[in-house]
Length: 209
Image 1 (tube, one colour):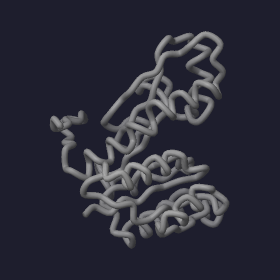
Image 2 (cartoon, helix red, strand yellow; image 1 turned 180 degrees about the horizontal axis):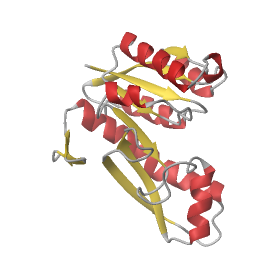
Image 3 (tube, one colour; image 1 turned 90 degrees about the vertical axis):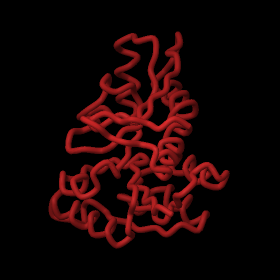
């Protein structure tokens, strides 16, 4: 059974999607064993507690710099014996030591179709604002492995939704979350826990279901 550690910063809707999928028996071979938050008031912590999941808090401002914070996070992940680390709305930067310690074992969901609308500055509503400003007709979300390059790791799964006339960033964000993020992230986690994802030459190969 693989230990899944989820990193959060806010409300934890993607965490809830993972919890619900686990309860439905969709995450075979894995279990959410710990939730680590970067903010003490993150509602995601309450979601974890309501479901009997261990929680930890590592507040960025309690550490001198990103390197000290990253070291503390790495220590925590090692203590929790993490087999898979999932970014679920985790908005705090970690340095390269963490992803190097967990190569192809750290996963993030990004609210756009990478390589579009990704990288530094593209997070939260900023992504959807940029999508609407550009006038693209299709958007979505991408689940990818975390590397030293922001949003640059191997792509695992992608899904799409239409961009509709009259959309606001908030409306589009909700459509992407409900129709793509909350479905793809649990699916990617399940594939990982069943050893169905291989990475070759920076690309993922997913074993047929």
